[in-house]
Structure formats: structure tokens, C-alpha cells
Image (cartoon, rainbow over all chains, first blue to last red; front, side):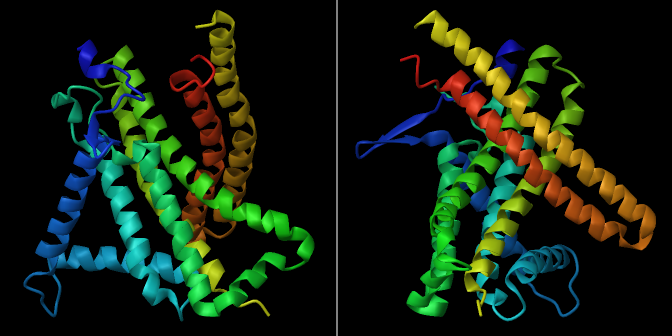
Length: 235
Length: 82
């Protein structure tokens, strides 16, 4: 029982590829998550009907929900191009958080480290946050050209250092928020499971499921908000 | 491993979460109180108020999480004990 409920942080299954050390457990779980999402999307879009029912109905509901995130933050005119990015980020984070919480990974023995949500590795969350940074720079520059950088001296040039600093704090806070929340959930659950293995951790696990879905929502909402901010017109 | 550094790291990791929880705790209390007041005033807006409240609570919570990340770094990936 003790080995089922050990607290492990900072231990990884290393894959040596071309002199790089990769965290293998992150890749395994994220490939599974991507495969599951692809399978859902393919099965849901086969045999489309005019009046949706079953899985197609559910997929349309999910699509409208994701579209609303982008529409609320970016605005009616320009949100369409960014629906794919925002929804991909949401679905990947949501599915990996829930996969980490719902699938009993501890039953699978690894030589080192353990299978868990990919988002409890800081490298994954930093990569996602940097994708968001690149996206909003791309959005702003492709819309306004070099004039995008005028926003650094608005409303006054005195705010220039703070505006530049903001470009660094945005990915920092995005990545730390997601990483910290997911790791904290898993740590709390494993500490509870260490103390009382049966029944007591269940409410905490439910809270973890709720919190991790809110984190996925927050990450995608904030990404959309940053993109919307970059696209906004200053007069 | 220097015992003073270890002891200081453990104390600091406890303090970093504890201190980081004070501000967001007050903030979340204020936000929840205002939301309850809003719902009492306008029960028909409950859905939107709840959504906004949850989102902003998560923002405040992330401030504590920053403290937690610092304390986890001190506990599991301490740069000073090498």
C-alpha cells in the first residue's frame, strides 16, 4: 500500500535521444491524450446529420463553448482565426489534467518516475505559455505590422519598461499557474492517500478535477485575452 | 549537505506558502462576499456572477500557487544544497 501512495517529485523516466535528456513519462501520457482527442474528433464527425444526436450533439456543444471563449475575449470580427488555437490549448490541458487525475497510472510500473498528468511538468506548461506569447506577437504584427510596437509607449513613454516587462511576466505567470495548480492537486491527493488510503482522499480528488478544469478554462481564456489585446486598435 | 541550509530551506518553504496565502485569502473573501450580495440583489444574474466569481477566484488562488512553486523548489529542487 505504501508504494501505491508515495510522493514523488522531480523523478523522471529519462530517454536519451541525440544527447538530449527527455522526460519520457510526459511524452507517453501526452501521446495518449492526443490520441484520445483525435479519436473523439474523428468518431464524432463521422456520419454527420442535419439534426445532431449522440456524440455529434456533444461535440457541437463543446465547439460552441470553445468558440464562445474566443468570441468573448477577442471580439466578434477577428475571433474566427483564433478559435483553433484557443480550443486546442483548452482541450489539451483539460484532457491531460483529467487523464492525470482519473486514470490509475500507479498500476503501471516504470523503472523511474511515474506516469501522471503531462501538465505537472514545468517544461510542458512553459512550452504552452511560450506558444501563447508567439501567437499574440504574430497576431499583433500580422495585423498592424511594425506599428504593433507602438503599444509599448502607450499611454505614455514612461511605461515603456513596464510594458516590456509584461511580455516576460505573461508566460511566466501562465506557466507557473498551471504547473503549480496541477502539481499541488497531485501532492495533496498523494499526501492524503499516504495518511488515509481509503475514502478520505475522494472529496479532495473531486475538488482537484474541478480545479483542473477551471485551470484549463483560465489558460485558454487568458491566451485569448492576450491575443485580443494585441489585436485591439489604439486610437 | 549543510544542515543550516536545509533547516533554513524547510522554514522558508513553509513560510512562503503561509505568507502567500494571507493576501489571496482576504481577497477571495471580499470577492465571495460581493458576489453573494450581487446574487441577493439580482437573483436572475446568478449564472453570470458565479462564472465570473470562479474565474477571479482562480486568479487570486494562483498568487498562492506562486508561493507554493517557490516552496516546492526549495523542498525538491533546492539550488543551495548541492
